[in-house]
Length: 168
Image (cartoon, rainbow, N blue to C red; front, side, top):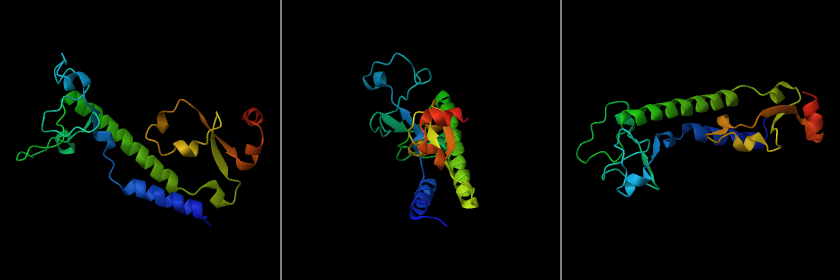
């Protein structure tokens, strides 16, 4: 019923869904602050102003999840993650909700039966500019793409793009 590629895809998606993803907790460090020249306070700047004990990697810091939830108790040694001011906490919470929504959407799409498993001609996702949308499906910003995505039956993909668009 399933071919080897779909099994590999399912294994990859399962791996992605079960791995803890903390990228949504990442904040960019203020470049002016790194040079000691930022005129804004920690509460006014839209970038992070980490204290010296916080680990900075490639100009980015990871915010403390416990601090965002209001329950970090790490004192000795001090927490290696950033305890962000409220305006950055708000942004991180928005990022976290979006990340969770995308993850849940992917899980829903992968758990529902596709048309091809029901015995109907399968649909293929193609972007308007001809780049297969599959390559963008797992990118964290794919939902924000300005490029519309269209579904076409596989047999229609043999037709030129203009002919396919006329059928819509």
